[in-house]
Image: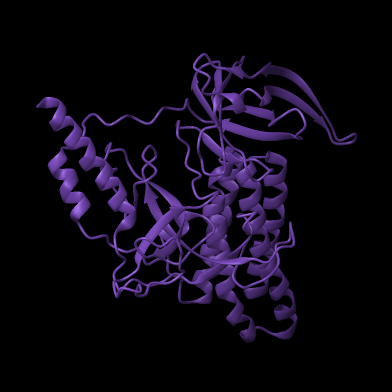
Length: 398
């Protein structure tokens, strides 16, 4: 009897997980606009049809939205933040693609509608490549320049550094692939600007852990904040990539839930109607999950733009590269909002303001790209261009 009850409970949990992706999308759901991406390079994302700049293939349409996913049970994808119905862990923000299907039909549609039998199409959310940039072990998460591998650096105890390696969906690299990764950790180095040569003074090999789940190095760094650099090859024939970390404190593993959901509450959760997400797509999920209105006056926009520039500067100085895109993208939106105000400027200031706005927008994208890969030199170069653009915008619009 107990075995039967356990089997029934597991079945209900699985049914709940499947239901999370198969709930019909209400007719009132506000469709995100179409974006265009490359089937082979999903990091390429445009707002109109075109050609992939990498492989030259035609871009294909996609509807992107922000959702919340269980970090463990990735089939659980919800419209709103909360806890996983299977394990009670906090859901994490992800970017998903939206499609609609009919039962018994493999065809996917980019809009809701009716099936041949008159029933409504079923809306589904699917995690997209590069849609999950959430650290799983309390560390700092970066995307490799090869646009496929992702890494997380953690500093859980004094003198111990761990490197976790993931694929483009944020899934841990299996042990037979992880063993091909060649890496070392540098805690002290010098750079000669005249020769452009870096000399490593203190470096440690990153070796496979006993459980074959990550790479680990015993290091000589004990003081906080701790700065260290992982230099990684994802195979003997790949280029070496640099990832710069700054830890203000020791990292902590997310706490595991202390209770397991009851079957009855899970069944109720599975039966509850989904609340549709109504936000527009964005390159990173958090920006669309927390939309902000643009200030009404030009003076207010300029003031906030300067504030976001200061936030970016602080994050760069602290080495929190994975977070620079948040204020940088807000600054980008503020710069775009200033474009209509160009008409109110004199000819000379208008000629200076227009390219300055473009520099802020481009600088924000450069910061996002550099922050993703965690290379300090690239981040600082991108910030130099970004902050110069902000200063020029403020001068032109005063």
